[in-house]
Picture 1 (cartoon, rainbow, N blue to C red):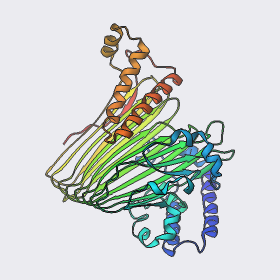
Picture 2: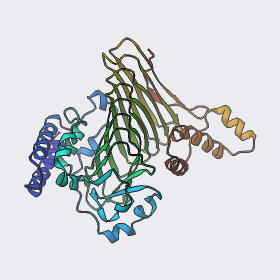
Picture 3: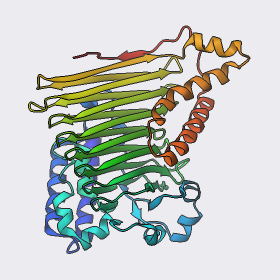
Picture 4: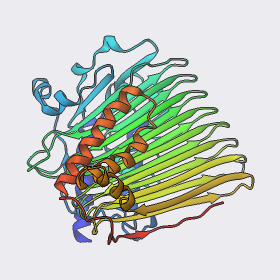
Length: 468
């Protein structure tokens, strides 16, 4: 406890330095919000496993490391020459690049952005349009009960700000690339993104986290918060890929606010980090809104990934579908906690949720708990969870056709994972991620030294299965 208290004091020291550095450069409302968030973090402290939502994820290792704010961004020439930049660029996309938590303005091709779309860093937007940001920033992702959201709100300096006007249809995906720059000392970054999608508009957004040089470097901590407001009749496909170094801690919150008849499809992919946790909340706050949540986590070794999702049906005649799948190998551990809330007046809600897990080794663990909280009486809601190993009959069938055991295992695992990827509407992103999933599964199965034959497989699972 003394070590944790010392770490909290360190955050307060860095916050005081941030206040001095930003004094007179920020609007009064933002200073007030920062202080309120830090005060709330001081009251909440770091979450412990005694809290139900954190029961299976301990952040004790994170609290013992003396993280310091990341230094200024790399020189432009160094960024251009980095392997992360060379390999991460996506043709036919609209890119925004962030290295070490800082926006690299020189790499954003301004001429490529269509009319009706305003793009800048959060830092630039706070100077250019503080009134608009006051209406939206930190208004959706609440820090009252979330320690890491409070910490991000206190320390947020940069990130993406995107405003899409009404009736704009983007044919190219927006690519938000965040590259962590590990160093000789433990570093932390707190990206903050705000995205406003106007009435009747359509967009695909790809939020991606990579590491520049994580191996043989000090651990680092990414604490990201993204708020997305989706206007009436707007359609958004949101894809997030997390593939940071296994030296990293990755904590993220994605908050979606949906208005009447809007549609949001989210696809969350987790491959990296030693400890990763993502909380995805979508509020269906307009009649006829529709939400689709898909997730895939592929981990091995001693990786730990925790997915927490909440679909809040606040208005009637809304629908949601959710499918999260996990592939675990080695001694990895996974957590899935999916909650569906149906408010009192949200009649005619139609919601389905499923979590499916494939365990490739004896020592991996998955804890899964789908939940329903229903306060209306005219609804149709189901949820469930499954766990298993590779089907022995399918293995036998493939091997009887002359396919080796490892090839058969790989084929069936890829098919299991691609059930999630196939739901991505953007053909460009779907093809790119199908290839990435095959590469990740191959890489992780090779590093995990394979698993046992399907028979004799054992695993632990904590599961709740209900239907209403």
